[in-house]
Length: 155
Image 1 (tube, rainbow, N blue to C red):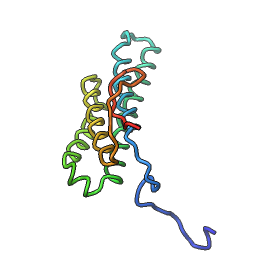
Image 2 (cartoon, one colour):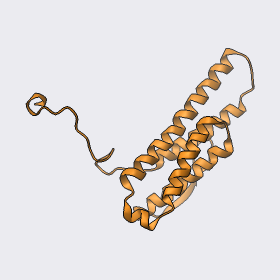
Image 3 (cartoon, rainbow, N blue to C red):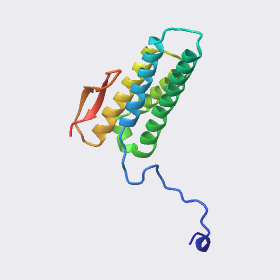
Image 4 (tube, one colour):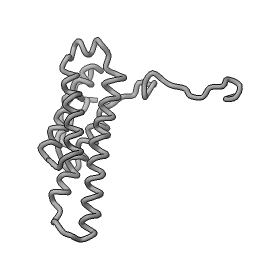
């Protein structure tokens, strides 16, 4: 069949053509950034290989999760948010920009303050996302460390 039509690549206009979008992946990633910072700050400094291995793994996960936040927000912002939502929520661009900057800052530094700021901005984004979907939201503490608040829809 492939040879019959000579199609090399097929592209969709968005990442999830079925319309399934949810900021929870970005929220969990932001929580993971905070958790990695907490774990790193809780380690007793040492020259041992075990310490170096552990800190290296925490840094790698922190960086991956900070990048995941940026990726997930870019997809929703770029593929789901349309001009009518931008008109209604003009602050969305500033929030997304803040998330991009804080995502990078959290890759570059070990700062709980910056990690919590990242989560707060992602929560602002989630509030707008769910408002666009006409869903009421509430704030709940995550059931796992670092036990920070996230915005979720009232189902």
